[in-house]
Length: 272
Picture 1: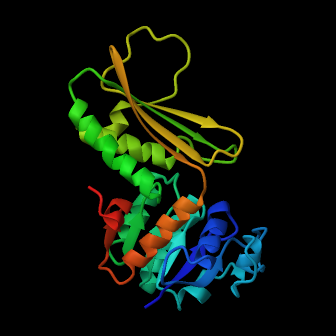
Picture 2: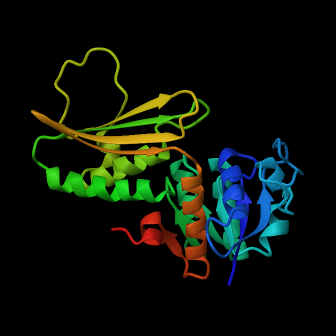
């Protein structure tokens, strides 16, 4: 049985990757039911396959989500965070499952998605790749194992010059995983970048975040556990957006028909 999906944010880089992966049959049983973007998107009215470079797929990019959602099982949303939260609310009214790959949400927008998940199944993750979600699991375990042993924690992420949010959603997700392993409140211990002179030593209960933007870097993330005499680093490097797209399609196939609730990629992949 196939899972019918709608790509929201179809003109973007991730939208194109999703279309290519569907065209190439990267995940069995996925059927493209629609492609959506904002009214002034550069790819509007084009065939989504042509826009993504794989040729005709028989689905044009439009701006009318309601018109295509009716025949879909799952909305895969990589649109801008403000529209994504509103799309989740609408999907809840229509009874459609949602896979959220967008990042940069405000607390209010996160609350909208959580409210929607009371009525529909939602997979929400800062990163959809298998490797990154394994990294999240490992970072939490490492933090727990190193708790109280004098290790400082720093997270460094690198992305392309066009990425709007910093730190990345994945970096924040890694920070949350580490904070959970250490039993810390991330909002209380996060330090975003550094400049100037500090009058004191670095606090032990601190998680530093550092964002690099340049070129066409797809996404690099490193969690550093540094102590006197040694340093442990856990890293992931993405070389293609297809890894994220395949994960999102796997999430769509997994979530179709499930009970309402807020799920993560750890649930989809069966990772702790």
